[in-house]
Image 1 (cartoon, rainbow, N blue to C red):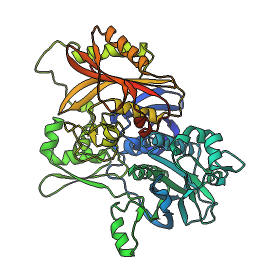
Image 2 (image 1 turned 90 degrees about the vertical axis):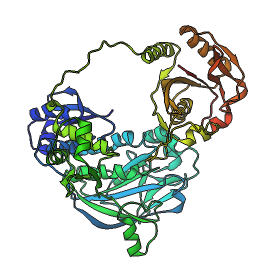
Image 3 (image 1 turned 180 degrees about the vertical axis):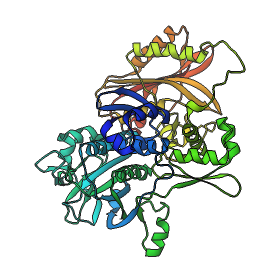
Image 4 (image 1 turned 120 degrees about the vertical axis):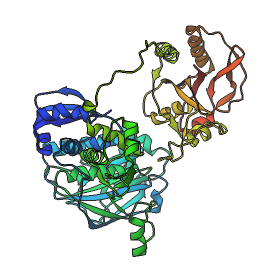
Length: 553
């Protein structure tokens, strides 16, 4: 989870309160204080609240929580008159684009540091280390709109950030520190993303590096912001950045994106019809989401007898818009920068926070029991002792996955007992996993820039036919990996757990024929092991032999 550094002088100015009040109350909005220093405090926030990854976001939330300024924040957004064209060639590389202009800024040490830190924290929190979302922030003084987002040849050259001499895009991937770190994101493409101005000057080579021409400094007054990526999270990231800058006094301006693949942003469709332009969107869109809550639902799930008026007051403390309608239910407006509001229950959580967990009365439980460790925990703890001793590092991927990763990439047929998501918000998370091995392969795919060998494992939940069970899976990737290696690991695991087993043939297509086996315990098949099929390695863009196993715990 990201740790945010907040300087007392800056945060007191932004909130309008003293540091002691802030330090005393900030844990109650869902924050863990890491350390308190003489001039600053370091606070860890949950990953589901990226809007709190900056001093501006924290101050905005605390002003409501402390009743200094409550209700839905309002931002004056004007048409900047700037447009950017998305060329067809980019749509198979990094197709989603959101842009904005923020003018009238006055930077100091605090605000520049917070902007750069917010950018990197969003790269991690929303962007999966820039793969899904990357953000470019540019000084507008030396660039000229309109802009173009194109697919350029690798031999195109420009001066990258922190360098003085031009480099080709290919050289940047091979020699620039950022290029080397993120070169794996460009693997498999014969052209690379590039954002140019009207004079063909380079703003950005996303998701790798900005151009030196648009470097932000203390003298910067006007910013052009581009957010590129693989899904609609780019718009959430853009909303978080521009509203944070607006909290510093910046004036937000929209940018028209022509030839966009996404014309589903609210209000943009009407604009398209009026102007007769297809595939045009206007960003940022700060229109709030609208919800409806019944007071009975709130009382039932929170367990506190609140009136509709009290519910609305707590929502406004948490920076929602709230009003009571004629039916007595509450109409709620959630800010466009809140990435975590996916269900009314998320709003109920904020009502609890607004009410104050410290104000909820203590109640003695009606039943008294003696606790003991659950058998699942006992088995899990055994494995957490065994696997690191065998040289494997634990990972914790999401239980949610996709059909592409789970079936297509693994060469496996769909499991009709799998549980799909009714309303997925991302093509990467459309179902509950029935096996763990695909998750581990995906992690290897994301870490090809790391040194070998890589040996990772997970012990966690899988869901089949609505029933949750626990599996252990592990993979090992390096040039010399083979069946003998993974068989030895399985031998050690089963021996340490006191289980006798035999192996027999299996037709699991994820493994290479002749180098795969099923695990049998007491006459029942509990898992598989072997060398990963070359076609599976290709699907995950892996280039080294890989072995793995998975078994029921």
